[in-house]
Length: 401
Image (cartoon, rainbow, N blue to C red; front, side, top):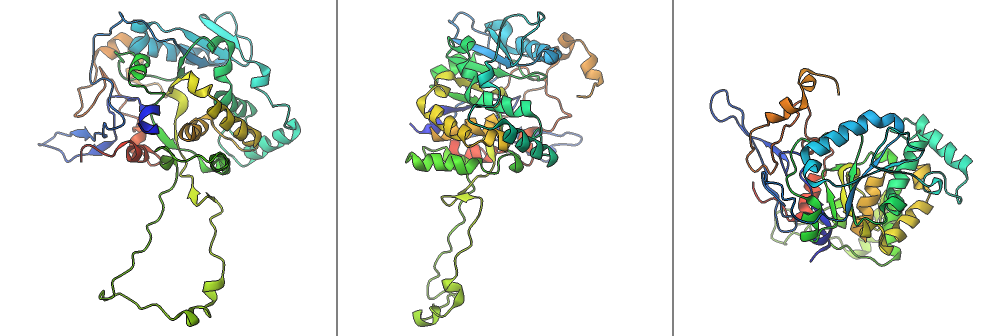
């Protein structure tokens, strides 16, 4: 079983599993669309369509984790209402709320404060140097680069959230961000399905990172791979630029064949003794393509984060200073670590029950249940910067034209 088979599961984000292909209208005045199917060799869809939620099974040892500040209460309420409506009203998984400060009395459920040692500057870095690096990123207009709290959040989600005392008793987690919405009912338990399929990590979308935020992240990840004599288990290739095809030797009877010059002439060619061009961004002949699994909706087995392999990887990446001197996000850290070891509109003014009763028609090859998708938003996988094609390559290719 390959690494990609046992580790990764792509979770449908809406009505569709794969990317959208435009199809010519069939009939006057009709516009139809269909979706390409991905091979199921390594990534079998858990459920197609709707089920009657089976709540008779024991729940997984799992929690829904929310990192939020007091001022984000309204956004948290929006997210929790959405997840409750579309999934958790049937399965009743607990919530764990985390904050770098103290929660006020408005927050219910399980909540805890983050250890300052897991949030602020570590003792091995000079805070003045780190603050200067962050300020320079702000001056360079790098997205969130000038926000110290954002750097701390990325580092916390990269190497500390799973160490929090409130999560120690759990084996699985589902990350929930403030101000998000789910568009489909999830009538099955993804935790139990992942356990059944022996999956470790589930993602919703894969996109490309902003290059200016991670200029050196691949150097350290590749160095870790080299130092520890690690070889690809099938997923590393998703994150590297494809190697250019080597030119093929032409047969002598080909009209374009040119007989090579004698060696004594070639030795006098200045270009033969000059050093080859070196790509400053390449490591071990490989170059990062900026792809990563977006971590905002991830579902994961916590033992994977707690493993020695991931911890060693995180420690090396952390000690590089990249979380402060650059703006490394937790998503590329999870991805590289994993492969190594609204504006108000009319419809939003409707009551939620009325809005969600009228769901979208089923799409060809779609897998979602009672989906109500926002047609004003272009699906991420239909935009430039999507890494779906790279995922398809390592997951077995396309199953439909």
